[in-house]
Image (cartoon, rainbow over all chains, first blue to last red; front, top):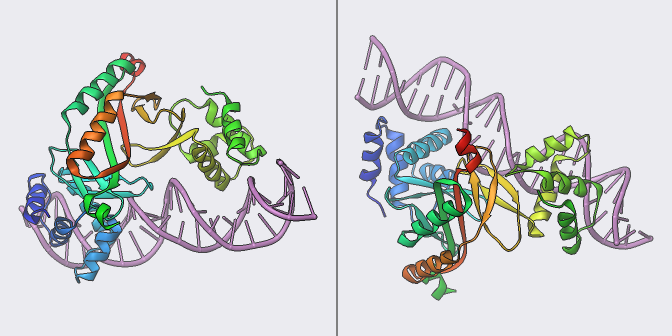
Length: 142
Length: 142
DNA sequence: GTTTTTGCAAACCATTTGCAGGGTC
DNA sequence: GACCCTGCAAATGGTTTGCAAAAAC
């Protein structure tokens, strides 16, 4: 889905050393469709015969998040998952059927957020919009 | 902040038995300003000399959530927190200074969500908008 | 060579569950 | 009295941390 090199370069530019385990995690993340958990990455790494400790998976996902190429999302179930994403976009639609995610952007949202800030008196620093539903494929399959 | 009786009645109407521990948790939740975690409620109960087991705190918060008077939110840190809320509204602004939360509603958001559904081909079943920032009080204090 | 990173195992923390006793309807 | 609820303690599952060895720069 994503070019592994993009993730590796992002780590590099963020000042992280490029190590084998980090390349392994980046490769798995890049090829993953939809959202994933740290445990899934660890399991996949093991399945591919790559030696990556659990702790390193967490540390690398954290690094990728700091490098803005992976984002942590919260599923409705309360689970923590991650998705590879473009730094510029920051909202996702998540398919509850297959786990696929798509990035979303909507100009009007900024106006909504601004308006809420004005009405509540808050200075809004951050906002997260997460949408859950069934993607077209799952809909026609179901 | 909230009338404890509202929470208790909600449990009653949802078919839960009204027990001492549940009333204790409802009382604490009703008086709490801002968001709280299960651990905070348990600690507060202990501080007040109320005998409420940890497990019961979780079970009661779950019941209150099912009764639609409490909602679970995810803080940017990834922590799970709860807020007492009006069943009709479903978005919150969270103050990163004092933890205060306010309910928010915006008619235009529905249009944004609909439009995203149309553009992505998803049938959107659920959406969550969470806003984080500094409330007026914290802003003038800082 | 210095500094960062890794893997392992142990530590942690939040949350859930099994079960016998006690409370509510 | 039947069924629900509670507390406890143990189990669970995800995530973090300490540390000595290994790798990157």
